Image (cartoon, rainbow, N blue to C red; front, side, top):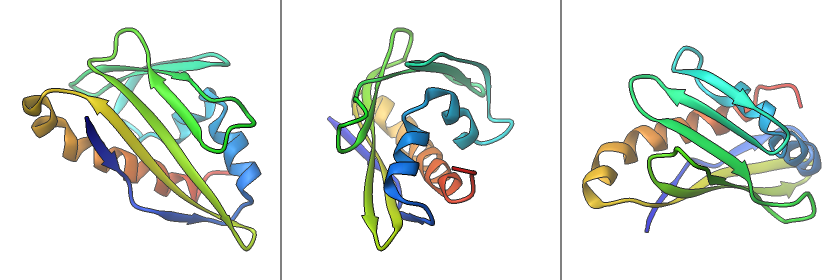
Length: 133
């Protein structure tokens, strides 16, 4: 199992607002780096996109609104099985957020994708601090 974690960021919004935003797959598009993905598709429970010069990634919501964390899992068409968990902690009216990816991949693929995925997850949590919640 490969674990890839983003940095921890502080978001100037209550945990419930951040969680509601992330629970909507349509909003994930706003967290991705502009110009680095294409073929975006989303509905109320899933989304998919193609990373520039790479793979198509499919995500489906795996957690319910009452769950502590927001969890997405890979869907059909993804190059490997994974879960992506948004860990959210409320601290004095703000939210500390971190993304954690648990992936099933061989060591060769891990060598290739670990750093780019960590960069992607860092970008996504950084964008959480700037989007309108």
